[in-house]
Amino acid sequence: MRIAEARVIVTCPGRNFVTLKIVTDDGVTGVGDATLNGRELAVTAYLREHVGPALIGRDPARIEDTWQYLYRGAYWRRGPVTMTAIAAVDTALWDLKGKVAGLPVYQLLGGRSRDGVTVYGHANAATVDEVPAAVAVLVADGYRAVRVQCGIPGLAKTYGVSTTGDRYEPADAAVPSEESWSTERYLAHVPAVFARVRAEFGPGLRLLHDVHHRLTPIEAARLGRSLEPYALTWMEDPVPAELQDGFRLIRAHTTTPIAVGEVFNSIWDCEQLLREQLIDYLRCSVGHAGGITHLRRIFDLAALYHVRSGSHGATDLSPVCLAAALHLDLSIPNFGLQEHMPHTAETDRVFPHAYRFSAGLMHPGDEPGLGVDIDEELAARYPYRPASLPVNRLEDGTLHSW
Ligand code: GCO
Ligand code: MG
Image (cartoon, rainbow, N blue to C red; front, top):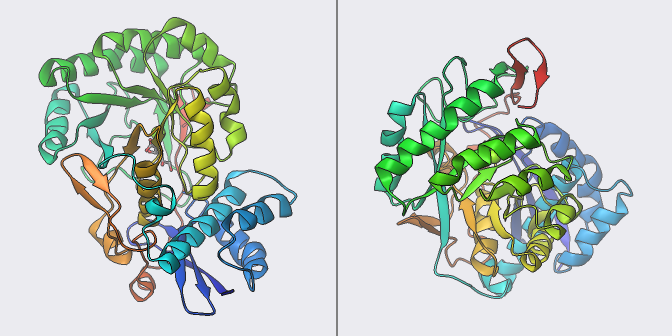
């Protein structure tokens, strides 16, 4: 069996997705997610122009060899565009291998280590008074873990909180829209949000919060300490993670667990944070961190340091990525939590899938391969629409991390 075609499909059923479909000369197919939010066409071109032609005629069974071929073969290593493209190929080859073997991918990865994958949902509200109702909706749906984001008094827009009442989808304009930020207003506000949620929902519910890379290490240390009474499962991306030594400072001051990694794309981005035990959960995704092959390697390294997985699962990762994540989550020993932001009905129709949610847990299903596909005819009805992520400025106009 040989690879005969590597087709890149771009579609926008409400938001943009890039999907790679690998087809063999026997007609077997495999799919991989190649979506990089706000930079979709860069990965599309990388796949169409550089990766696709090199795949034709290769043996699809050689997943590891193909990974090494694309990683070492480019000479230019790492980076989100390259690693998302490699991830798409890798994911598609695992899907294909599962179909050839007649087994779901989690069986190829060693079988299941748990009954289901615990996922967390998003509760977003404009004001503290509206937070309990937003959390209650998720609890009623069966979620056992909830991420809470709340509007900040004095700021027009806040990360994670929709201003239209619709689902939160940050890539909202072709040219980046602008948001504003105040660390002072934020730090003064967040503890009250969690005080309220804990008081209303008691100790059993797992609570999470995403800082979205906006603080300095000492500010993050203060936030972590102020949240200790509310026993969060994690405080996510407290600081931009380029300066990894900075996490020592946060760690020295707080026992609030830390989750990092949704913008990481390689094991080398994680290595110091893991080796020095500076974090508790690793948020790398199948789609952005080199596929199932590389992410499993990353999670194996994490396991040595008591770090658990907490994979990114926002709506900009397609149902193909979510399916792949669930197979990995089900199989690895050091699974922690999986993010789950349900896709729109339009997206679910474009990507028919076997995975399911029940009582706070997800399961990838038992279809051979990943159990997800793309309906190409339907996908063609939703043409690509340019959409960028926002930028963020302090109240005096200084550009800040978004
Ligand atoms: C999360 C993330 C997302 C990102 C988005 C960017 O924790 O789910 O922070 O909300 O902002 O995926 O593309
Ligand atoms: Mg995040």
